[in-house]
Image (cartoon, rainbow, N blue to C red):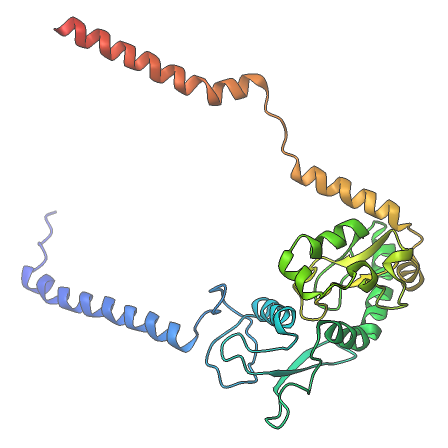
Length: 289
């Protein structure tokens, strides 16, 4: 059965409507981006930090954390990355939740620590109880799972077995950070957050994977083997954990070697085919002449 063709006039009438619908969609996208702008650093989407200052800029939690840690390394103060206003930071002792407020105008630079070492000591004191609790919970979880797991850090990272040499490279591998230590021996600054054991007496630490980029520990977070075993009740020498961790990391980094035939096929065969094709084209061209 034949079907009637659509009326051309009605089709033409709908075209402007379609254009206007597309325009409305674009306007809605622009409006949404204005109402919910992405993070100013990574351009990702939330969760966002509630800024204590009057900046309209959005920062996601990881970028804000990294920015404040960089500010502490740079000038010893927590400053907003946009307006550079001094920020007062506090930590809930039970939950380790961070809260921010603008520093009083009368003394904007004295409400919180003003040095790198001061911030390290401030956060170590505030998070001590949480670290003990997290280690106890980790011991129960690891025993139930019957396998070695990486314990959490109070900042949200993971504690992993780290050699003293690797911890030293975190600072001495960055000339900017070495200069900010003002001649201090970083090895003497590394100590267990729970008992104060120095790196001078330890071969390795349980250190946070975030290293020097977290606001809660601008110099890194370290827990000695004795405190780890005490609070987790796990009798695992840190040397063994370090060896296992390094082996797992090497396995992930090492790519399987390709067989010789696969390498020849992928690297040489395309070139050989190209050469043969050129020769054939030359023979055809000469024959045609």
